[in-house]
Length: 344
Image (cartoon, rainbow, N blue to C red; front, side):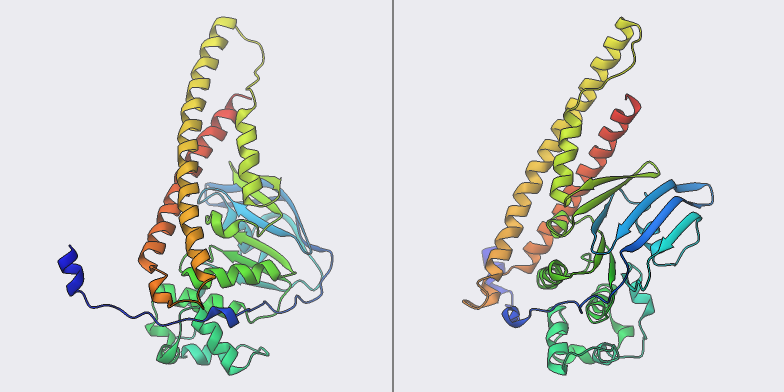
């Protein structure tokens, strides 16, 4: 293996100086106190009920994370808020609310015959050409790549370009549906820093725990066609979930012998699932520490050559592994919640 590695041509990674890139979203436009309200909101696709009797208030300045397993209604609700889907029940949108929405199919809206730089320059903004090029570079479009036409870009490149464009459009509500799926460490870090400084209303749909950490002050959990709200960011939400799991299960009195056997069986199931989740959480913590080392290296980016500091393949591997472990944790958590709900 060592001999083979010596024969492999070394790839020189271009240096990116991100210390000078401190991009911010445009200052939010003024709007009323209420951004969105729903009353007995119901949505189904044929016989598939997504959610029923959903009541949710979103206020100006809220920073909300939508969490839950795939197919439970997170994206559906964001599309309803954005006015893309019909529904039953009633909703109210606030006065002068302007939404910037990033969807997973956002790349379908790109003009295929435009080049990358033409598309970015077509969006009204106060940024100079140099600043626009710097932003494109942060999203991995640099050099002659900015003259590529949109129709030759890969799905990931199109998604990054759409997200880059989103940073230029003024609004007072930003909705991002899985924005980090195709972003590398630079683009993800720049986006997160921009979101931290954003003063408008923010709604995030993401499975990326590391990205969500510290970004929101409300978590809306979608489960069993309902929603449940938790204060704080994703870390507080996970802590609260752990507390809920430790609460005893209380049932109405039944035959003592039958109840004892049922409780013993339930306790055994919960212990096993909790143990599995604890092991997963330990793995998540290890992976996040490794990802944290990359972030620390980025802080030293001006001190040494980046090609000696950042291994992109290793970073992508860690992120993929993190997503797998988060999905495993989510599956286990859904099983735990189901057991608790069925025995309350």
